[in-house]
Image (cartoon, rainbow over all chains, first blue to last red; front, side, top):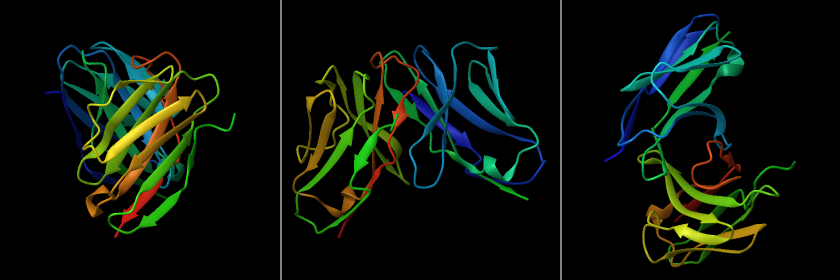
Amino acid sequence: EDQVTQSPEALRLQEGESSSLNCSYTVSGLRGLFWYRQDPGKGPEFLFTLYSAGEEKEKERLKATLTKKESFLHITAPKPEDSATYLCAVRGQGGKLIFGQGTELSVKP
Amino acid sequence: DAGVIQSPRHEVTEMGQEVTLRCKPISGHNSLFWYRQTMMRGLELLIYFNNNVPIDDSGMPEDRFSAKMPNASFSTLKIQPSEPRDSAVYFCASSLGGLLNEKLFFGSGTQLSVL
């Protein structure tokens, strides 16, 4: 069964304190790993897609990386506006997106 | 573009009542998804439409749930009768290109509370 586990559940950082979020997955035939950002009271917003081990993508202070077992979302010098819940999802051979529970990130000034 | 529009934003109802959630996808998108989000189970796909046709409804929890897409610009998710365990945030999302499209555009959701 396809499964996604994110850690930690919650992360508190000071502004400028870099860190990483983890997404571990088991899937038959990975057809993409996705990162979404979700703000309170809103729907998830697409950030990245990664397709193969070794692939990296960047957007502003965020960088996503992928191995055969997990993905990391690195946040460099975060700002308060980066506070949100970050969701990881995988797509297996069945085609559906399977989401993790998310990591709630709080960045204090 | 207005994005995916859902209504109502909040719905409070009593157990046994019928609930109808509405969604207007982004114009030109040909795929529509209904998701449910809870603390316990996270985001779960309920049903997926492509070109107004239901393709996969295996995530619909029970016969009490039904979804329709009468045209390319409107979809409904109905729960009849509603139960307290149906309380959740229900999201509609749309995309161009079907199930394998990487980018889903989500609405702001409907917060459903069944008392």
